[in-house]
Length: 179
Image (cartoon, rainbow, N blue to C red; front, side, top):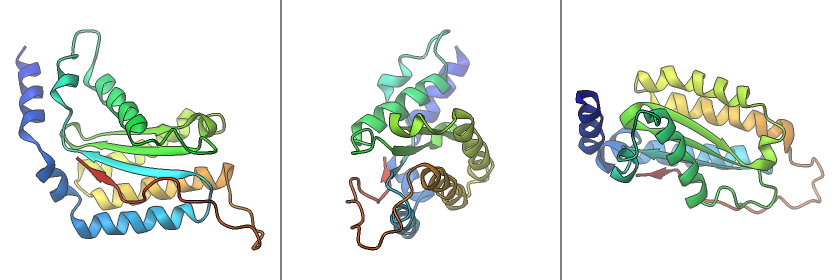
């Protein structure tokens, strides 16, 4: 019971100002530029979402059968849907989700990309990011995640080398979402 109270307190304590401190405006702009640069190399779409804490409606679901990791994954999938990452023409969108309260990271890939990329690749990217986030080096972790996610997208959805072909439209905003 005490652990559950600590968990609730941690999530109630953090808010959007904590997210803005972790990802200040200059970093937000650099990340948006990196997403745009990445998307010039492949036809996929990458979104970054950083949340301070889970909404209370998620925390109420915590039970003996549902862990905080389960709830974090559920939230990442919900944000994947809410942000329309699933709604790209080639179904090759990727959401990089960071939950500050839990130092949790989730990567959600759309079905078009999931057919090509092994789940172990995403777990490996998350493992690489984890240490940077534990050390509060958010820029390093997110930049590394972008680079590794881009490599997966370039391997499976590279842009054609023909200069006569126009680049695909940018289907999703490049600016990370902070909540």
